[in-house]
Length: 230
Image (cartoon, rainbow, N blue to C red; front, side, top):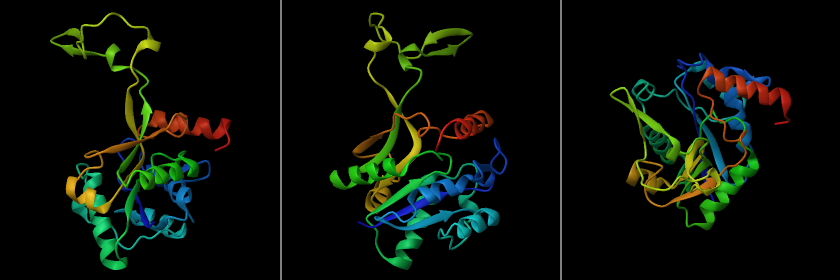
């Protein structure tokens, strides 16, 4: 199997300035994702899509493929991961030929393991290359969530059910941003990682499912570094 690993890393980060090059456990954040798939059998290349020359230099030093800087139209706050993925995919296939899948790895999930990535690739292979996306159980169940409407709190899910204990609630999952694997045909057809049949890659480990988006998330990541072997 031939899978292109794509790491998307913009230079602009409003919540955590310079996030993708900021050092976590002594190495830039983006290197965590590069190292996670380095020398993996089914990965034909690790392509980094960035608009930032400093990120490009770090990725090149880590032996990732950085053939260009991302166009400005794909580097704004409203640029979608799908558009960025299609841009990289189209360029790569024009240069190197067809691939079986494109694996999106966001730098903000530094603690995903090689074992988990290999499990996701195995699911992709065994399920006739349906889309595989990583999920984790939600911390706060939506049955217990409320929304503010005209100054009054109302149940977000207004189901007429008896009060359930936590252990009786149905399992509910949310994407954690760690793993997206899809065929080029499905990505082009649906322009989404979520349409069609989605095979779940369930991640139960809280470290692996951490998605660094805020300063608080970064502090949690540093705490993990200081207390656990990662």
